[in-house]
Image 1 (cartoon, rainbow, N blue to C red):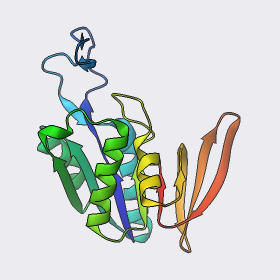
Image 2 (cartoon, helix red, strand yellow):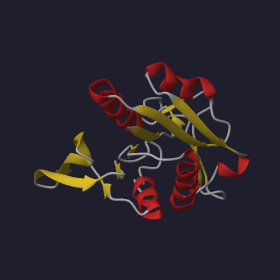
Image 3 (spheres, rainbow, N blue to C red):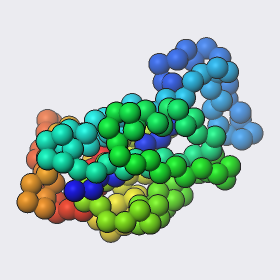
Length: 181
């Protein structure tokens, strides 16, 4: 079994926002100086789900992250946690990608990385809260996508996901390969 986990590095969401500025011309938020980068907490949940599968039934976990000036020490934490491989897509051009361009970039890296059974993404990024990249990757790769997961298991070539819906939860099943957020 091969699991790919997509992880984004973000400014620490628990840091004080008192020094945050908005560059209206560039249309972006500038975090306070000295705010350390961290892995998006939603993506950490995806990594935790992958590690649970690895512990229960064995799997090889590959983490993929894209951006500019990535803090390697932050991303190496995924290896310390139990991921087997780390693929970094780093270029100055990746600083201001929108969700569509990010999904294409990551989907291309996933194709290049070889066969996989499951792709896990966080529900949304802790900085933009857009929640579009995971679904975009699934669409580009032409695989099923199940969003808002709160529990997942793999059995007989299928992913079984309990997901959050407005009036509670539901269980959804899809063949692998699939993407779950």
